[in-house]
Length: 372
Image (tube, rainbow, N blue to C red; front, side, top):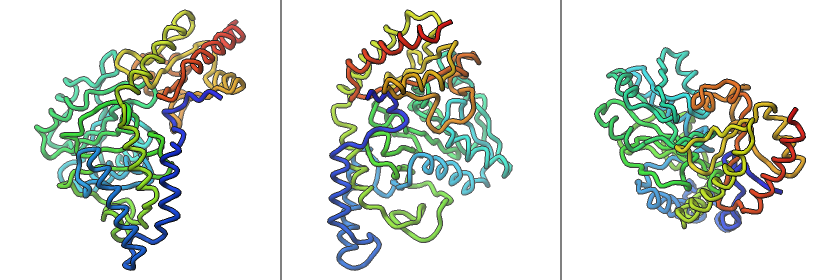
């Protein structure tokens, strides 16, 4: 089997799984309980939270555990909008976001909020002139993904964050689901940050929203204090402990892992560029972990299943995307045909040269089989 869908989800690390199992077996109490078993569980949870805080250079009180990035994004966007709507009802975002950004934004529009989209350049990078033009005193939130999940475009988050400091009544939310554990990014001057464990070889079912200590949110889930007043529910300390382990492991040898993925990405690009009907949509501003291509004479689903027959697994668009046309590919290429025929190959430091070689061999066979 050749797995090339790491941006959809990653296999759980054995070390992470071992941590989850050990904590589940040895710390059976509810961390909110007052007896010894509960106190022990609470101490473990707090220790893991401190580890995460240290790794991210934030305070433990700024960490809100969620079920994943989709919930984190919803909590950030709805939480800010509903809490600070007295300041204004204008929100800025891009056409390169995940569906869990567009969903809550569409909901807020039904409540009278105004959503406007920033322009991007020929590489898919947010135009600073567009941001300067659209920002006003009614804007309470800017939400931009650090890395797009379909084409891999890396945004200049630090530059945007510095500019937004001029607007103290506006908050900056960054979906870092596709960048945490892959590239080095500064979290300074960013107010809210979303990410998920299952993208960094952790267990599905836990994510995180980092919220600056001075910010308040309207909770999505009410019902009493858990690990934070902003998200009620029984503290899932086995998931928290395993999340801390996954994050720590993802930061180890980060540059070495990046260089390994970069070499594989270049190998793919070199192998695919000889086909006249194949277009590479991930440009030089994309991280190497994501390579989006379009094969214009094949439906993406047909190509996906052709690879599946050869035990190769890739994606069409993001795993959570809806619709036949990729918004992200269209935003970058301005070509509807490419946006209708795009597939995503996503790599990991676990990917081998042998797997890429096999993919290219199978691609050649599939290409010539379906080429009319």
